[in-house]
Image (cartoon, rainbow, N blue to C red):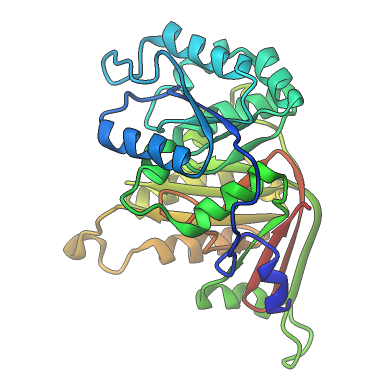
Length: 333
């Protein structure tokens, strides 16, 4: 895979100029209440500065206990996002709240909105809506930024913005990244000879996944799509590696990991190890162990999760995955 190929895909070499008219972006809050109002305002201002028309849902700043309004309020907000005719329906933030209303989502409205061209974008708790929509309608949504955490950052990430821009202009074709050195072992056994970099390819696998906690919460329900031969991507934050391992074990024992062509690990961050207690047990331990439990290749370093630099991923779309040496590329263009 040449460096030039990376230049044509949203990734670290990506450097796009904004090259389109204004897009209509609808901001709504389907999960936790917005507590950081300053980040919300910065996010709106940033999107407007990029030339977009920003419409804010009437309940975007609602608060009921820890939620952005009670269940009915948030279900109604999702319905309004679907009816908005916007180019993008963007969540204000994740947190918690979608799993408890997942059975009451307006699936038909969401699917029709997507058919008409509205792209639903978000991450974290939003995984529940994405999985349910995929399971019930087959429609594609996008794993990507949230308003406050990403556009509302003091300095929004260039790559995240470039990938979002690609989505808006319909130029998004794929995402490339460099695998950590620790992943090289996964491919060594596949290499035919030492001079050729090992090559791993998946053609036409359904890309799906998101937040590990949320995926596990949906196992055994009708809201987790039953995907075989897919490419599963996972991320999480604020979870100790032992908890990550326990959840991966659930996906393993439920037969989900074994049915995939590949598993891509995004960012797992914001946790603290306990030196006297963990004694060398860390995130890498978890990934190394998982690889001994499954024949499904496990790759890490996907630039996605609760991190500033994140690519946008089409959840539910058929994609190709190519890994050559330490260069990885998912493409759907």
